Every structure is written in structure tokens, then in C-alpha cells.
Length: 339
Image 1 (spheres, rainbow, N blue to C red):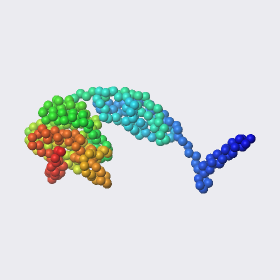
Image 2 (cartoon, rainbow, N blue to C red):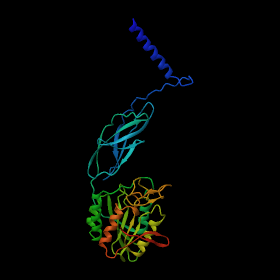
Image 3 (cartoon, one colour):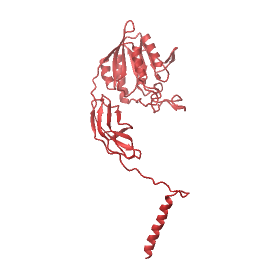
Image 4 (tube, helix red, strand yellow):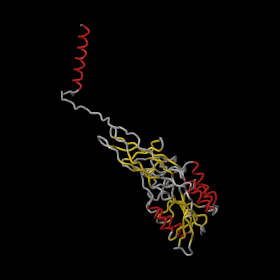
């Protein structure tokens, strides 16, 4: 009998506690919180399109959810590589002639995640290295490339690996040796191409070799132009801040063309494009209101770059080489060291 009374007493106290927890300090009834435990439906109709040597577009049909789908998780094999708020995503930085498996999951605001969509296999295209030919005005051609360069805070710029830097060095060797077929072959392995461009606006016409990334860009290392028969064989012009220092890319091309210099380097993104910091000492207020270290996309302040590797190669292989950077409308503003 005593045990029965104790049990009744326990349930009475528990009931009081539950009742008190449903009210705030003023005695006002609190709303009952409903936990969303419903999973979104599995995405369907997984498909791939616009397959290139290094990229592919993925698409799928939308999932449904009792509250709403927040985003989709994209997987390459078993690895989650990205998220998308739409039913579309472009995967980049792939290797040519390689099979990849892709699938997606849906996620709602409560963090509930659906099962996997069906998996699709995508084979990237095999690279067929070819020398591209062009003609016209070299300034106009490169200006079009400059206009496509991404701006700050977009995080497009990729830091080259040690292996890629070695491969790039061999490309520059081939260009300097006038072994263009070898340069074409090796550049394609890094998603670059060689364009043999005849400038018909010059008398006599001049041939230039443009080392530019393919239209399906993934690295954004910049554009490098070499004269086949330079008038000033040891002069190299450099434009590392074409988006931040307005018009410097076009001005560098003007000086390069009209002096028929040996080479010109044009950077591939805004100097603040990447979120990662360079190992270069010093700080700048260029990328925000505070003072931050230089970004890896700031090629004038980063020695671990294709820009720097090209500079080092030409410094070593061209006797009495002269490097000039930061061109402005008054002419040469600053002579820069390659190291």
C-alpha cells in the first residue's frame, strides 16, 4: 500500500513539473515546439551535359519537403564536393579522359537529408592538343580576354601545385625554344592552349604566341603573350593588377605591341579574388577596410604562382632581361624585380 502511494506521489510531482515548464515566469502559456523530422524526397532525373575535358554540368529534378528544401549536396563518388540552392551545378577542375560518378542529396532547413539520387557516370573528353590560329589586332584580342577576368571575392583563382609549376616551366622552355608543337602538347595538360596570332595592324605583320586558358577555365592563372620576332628581345612587361589598377592591362598591351617587346604577362583575376592569404610579408587595405595580408590571387605579392614561375624562367633564359610592371597612362611607373 505504501509503495502504491509513493508511485502516485511520483506521478503527481512529475505532472506539476510538466505543467510549470509549459508556462513562462508570468504564467503565460508557451507555444508547443514541433520538431521537423520529415526527410525531403530523393532527387530524381540526375543528368549531365556540356561535358568538356575538365568540367561538366549536372542537373536533377527538385525534391519536395513538408517545409521546403534548403539546398542540395553534390557528391563525386563518396565525397561531398559542393552545395547548390538550385537544381543545377557545374563541376570544374576535372581530369580529361576520366570517368567520374556523381549523385546528389536534398537537405531541408531542419537539417534533414534525403537519400541519394541515382548515380550517373560522366567521362570527360580526351584532350586533343591543337595549335589555334588567329589574326587581327593583338590588343583587341587580349582586351577581350581581360574583359572576362573575374572580379574580387569570387574565389576563382587556384593555387598551382608543385607538379603544375614544373610542367609550366617546361611549357615556357618550349615557347622560348620555338618548339611550339611541344608547348601546345604540354599546355593542354594544364587546360591551356597556344594561339598563334598574326597581327595584321602592324607593318610588317607580326606573329605572337598567346598562352591562354581554354574557355572552360578552371585555374585563372593569367595570359602570357610572346613575340615570335621581338624588336626588343629582353623587354618583358607585366600587368599583375588589371582589375584593381584600372586599364593597366590594356596599357601594358599597347606598350608591348608598339615596342614589339619579348613578352607581356596579364594576371587572371582581380587581386582580391581569392579568400586565401599569400605567404608574402606585409599587409594591404585594398581588399577590405581593415589591414589584411596579401591574397594568393595578388600576383605581385605571391611567389608561389605561374606568374612568378614565368618570370623566373625568362630571367634565367633571357640575357640582360628587363622586367617592367604597373604600367599607367604616363608610361612606365615602376620597375619590378622578378624575385
